[in-house]
Length: 294
Image (cartoon, rainbow, N blue to C red; front, top):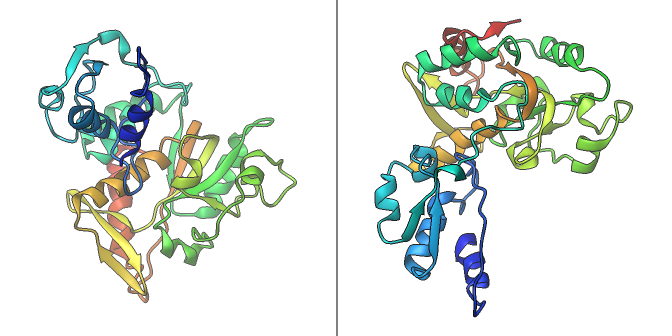
């Protein structure tokens, strides 16, 4: 039973009426079993067709309807289109409402759109690029004022960042990482412990270092998807799992309220798991978009 089916099922027990308000973000599914808005449509269509459904006309992107036209998604439902239901202004990145759009263009390889949005947001919402982790740490520390929080984040699949001292398999203690002050080495301020997408989804820091590994790598004109198993990378072929990884980086790139820096390490010609081109091509792609470099 999916989460939407369970929740609607609970509310469906009311004999008179009930209302469920769903605030569903696009492209936030990062774990097996998460299906976003489509899971709600599927549950209502197959189990609860008598419910009335009110939706925005803006949920047409693949992040919401997974490449199936909205009309098809709603065909078997008793639905009503209400334009006002779309929450168009993100509050996380208060310096610029177009950060999510920029990240989407970056991950969709819409270069022209990404370049345009980056030029638009970069003055108020700085985004930098570096291959030097120490410079990245100095950058977030220099940007932070007062109690503004900064932290190091990475994909849970970024296992070869261990060579840089970033060990994603070491679990953070969330209460210390998110709440403790600069004098506690367990806090995000220490830039020693790394939070993954599972730790930081739905939360944020003011400034972040996004450490980018070879699990999501740019090759020629597209992204390729990998998982590190045992002693090497294995290609992810299942479309659903590719989407989870893409969404993982969407989450990581949208956790900062005020700005972030992307750290992509240098490769190592003597390490088969860290070949130079695993990282160089991704770096060049971000350069092409126009990201400022340190």
